[in-house]
Image (tube, rainbow, N blue to C red; front, side, top):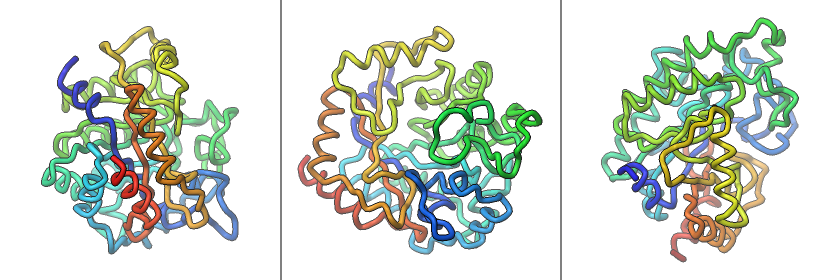
Length: 339
């Protein structure tokens, strides 16, 4: 087992953050509420890019404090932090020269969120990982997901079918070459040492494209781990399903085999696992979702996962002002007191 694998296996506990333009909506739009995930609001309500993009003009989280987030994670016993650098809506929380639809260029906030978090993590010795949606991108006419709309999702379609309805004209390789790969190279080279890249929803991406991303990560950041949601059996560790708690250790071997079946490849043994968990029912901030797990429930879930050798990555969805909500803080501080 190499050093990166050893770190990941010993880390056991991390904090995930879903934050972006969707946080301004809070899962609600024109009197309606999302079915489940608040960060899927643009797809659920089929909000045109011309309208959704106006949220950037209102994004000014005056209470965002990178050091406060990092100190909070450390106080709660977390060993790493994973933040949404770009979610499915295509808006980046870092300064991107590949696409001006980002927090630095398109908002009155005008600051590079990822740069501030990277600096705070370095200062306080907390490992940093970045989430990046490498397939779905609703801001792009050629964003992925258009081949998979028969499958259930948290919106109406996986791709942006409201602005760009003609699937026959879509070519994900255009989005991949013009935006996805350039932005991945930006986050790999601009924010210091990353412990992992957390990819998501590999629906359209090809085996060769997954391999190209994997090789770029290893070229720029040899010790950066890659989760299985990059797709096509190309990964360093297995991301289990959202909120998934396996019944037993025996179930994990089958999951690893399933993940690697796409191209017959397997990561170096032993296999590493992680479950990303929500504290309520959503990942992004929601005004109406108050179905919070109890401290005892979160503590028991964490212990069960860790007992099977699975890392527990607990998510928070900061509000539009950049604050980790009081309920999330209450639960995570309560769990920390029991550790």
